[in-house]
Amino acid sequence: MLMMTEYHEWLVIYRTLVIKVEEVCTGAPWQAWNLCWPLVEMVVPVLAWNPFPKRMNMKRLTLILAAFLFLSAVPVWAGTFPDLVLSGGLTDAQKRYLGVTSEEFKVSEIKSDYLFVEMYSMYCPLCQQDAPKINDLFYKVVLAGRDDRLKFIGLAAGNTQFEVDFYRKKFNVDFPLFEDAEYVMHKALGEVGTPTFYLVELKGGSMEILFFQEGQADDKDGLLKIIMDKTGD
Amino acid sequence: MKRYMMVVVFVVGLLVASASADNPNVYPVGTLKPVDSVLKVKVGDPAPDFELPSLAGAMVRLSDFKGRKNVVLSFIPAAWTPVCSDQWPGYNLAQELFDQQNTELIGISVDNIPSQYAWVKEMGGIGFSVVSDFWPHGEVASKYGVLRSSGVSERALFLVDTNGIIRYIDVHDINVRPDLGVLVKEMEKLDR
Image (cartoon, rainbow over all chains, first blue to last red; front, top):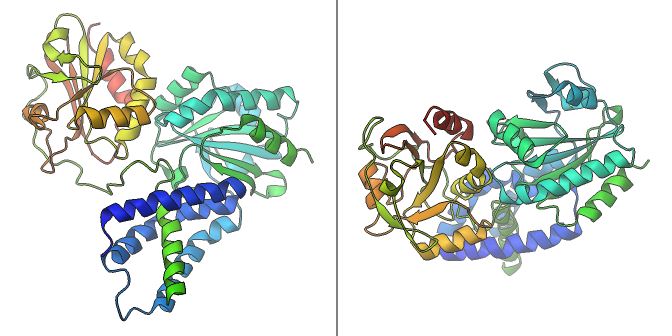
């Protein structure tokens, strides 16, 4: 029988492994792992209770798990950013920045060739630490004259409008931030950890995810280079 | 057979690993019964006094703030658990909102001091007072009626005015973080 302590040792060991893999393969497919959690919650306790009984058909079990993984991963392997509905709290200047006129609009309606998205939370210490770095990234894009083709937005997972407004004021965030109090957008993005960063191609209605990073923006310059390279055309 | 076992372990492991994308040190507790206690106080009652050891080393006594400051008591269920591990960092960021309302924020959990110390350090530090209701176990939580049957406290907020009177209570769904905006509005109603 697999004990809970062993379960968590597994968790730490494999999480470390995944982080190492992600460092090499920073692409959208890796967020596939995060889509699997609801299934894991069902499968792992069963395995933990009786992982390898004598008559278990291991080949079949492997196939079932592989199928779970594949089915969970399909939407993200496709590398398409969901056409989320965004609303609320924008100033006129921010509406002009995004090229929208209504209070509620879809991501695909943003007038830009590319979109940089930060999924964050006011309550996340790593996001708090990252806030000045992402601001700096935003201003560097503006200074490079790339801001007409590359827009920035933040999606606040589990944050109310009050909390979004406080975060904006606290860190002097100039790009638009959107509340996601009920985690609707967070769920649509596979309940990724915070912060998570996406670079999405919007031109031609593509919505292709060009870059994905789950975790802190430790290498700000590296991130800027990736953004500039991928949006340079 | 061994090969299949290895494949299964690898796939499951990768899946399990994904569960801790936010913070691998946070213990996944799953979804719990939203509220599992019965309040023993109500708005308008004098707040039961207490004296508890704080992470900073000193004892913290509620009645010491009487006549000087309003107090928010933030009970959280346990260290190293989801929601709790971001609720206090958020309050830490928003400390100025409490200061503006002449309000002292006190964080309370039933964990012992060493556990709180390691957890707070992991979160990058907390500026407000964190006190331990570990022994007698959960005595203060029990006085307020927010000690759950499992031995942890509810996720609860009590706003106490400068006269020591409870002016607002939110025993929140333990699985969900309370909206900071609601608490700030309640603080704004009090005299500074």
